[in-house]
Image 1 (spheres, rainbow, N blue to C red):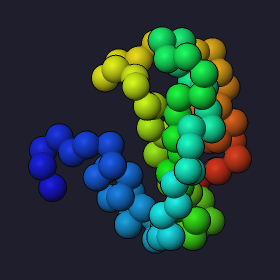
Image 2 (cartoon, one colour):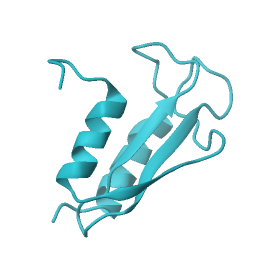
Image 3 (cartoon, helix red, strand yellow):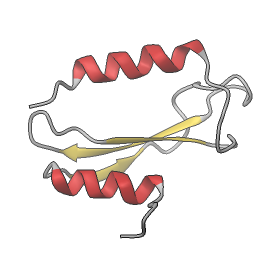
Amino acid sequence: MPPFPGALQTVQTWAGYNGANGQVTDPAPTLDLTTDVAGLDTVVTRYANALTGGAVELWTINGGSHVPTLSPEFSRRVVDWLLAHPKR
């Protein structure tokens, strides 16, 4: 693994740690997490099969910069996701 892996490689590594497989990517953006990209901007890739407490998802902001301007929706979505997927 390179010293600074990209987001996709990091998610794949965590999926392996958590015994998750069955990668599924939404066909189109389903979330609006930035203020600098208009409309739905984020595609979700999730692992459909994971052990309890081992959920893994990657949220990819299409058209966003390396450091996007996140909307208030972002923090709500992250907290909701964390509460819905407690660590085992």
